[in-house]
Image 1 (cartoon, chains in turn orange, yellow):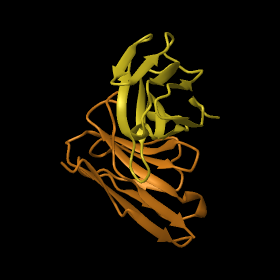
Image 2: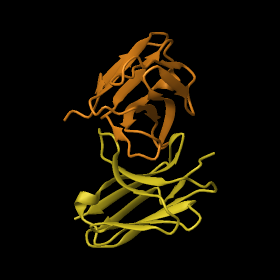
Image 3: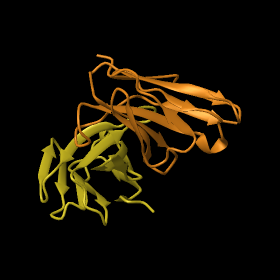
Length: 113
Length: 108
């Protein structure tokens, strides 16, 4: 079982460039999440989705956009990359409500130079 | 402001010793989850505690949820090098609210 798959694993962007971080899960989970993990700061929720077509902001949504057209996929879009967005990004999914265990991908390490 | 405070931030001990790490908050959570994360990987769930005062055991790891559901502890008995990692507590609200984690190193 693949679980939660994130691509790419590493990426370097220039300031002002845009990119999409891909996330797909094969567990038929309804809830999906995007977190960022900065050194020494723990993980912070960027956006989440409770099902296809439904997304909502988390704690740190500025500078990001998401879409959820299918149950499996939850891409995260950076429109104008800024150095403050240098971080490790994790996608996660859970079967139903927020109390359910979350399954994480292995992350995308993004550097903005 | 960090909603969940974990302590200590770093801990390095010898194999065979016991240890306890803490997760404290001024807020009440419907449940609290403990994750372990290794370098280059995503967090992996260890346990979920739901009821105030609940104690759960996972081999040598004992997790406790405070009576008021605001704090939790993780106790490891006879630590082994394989226990090395970043231990994260996360309170359930909208998504998960994570603490900064405890970096644990068990030296052989």
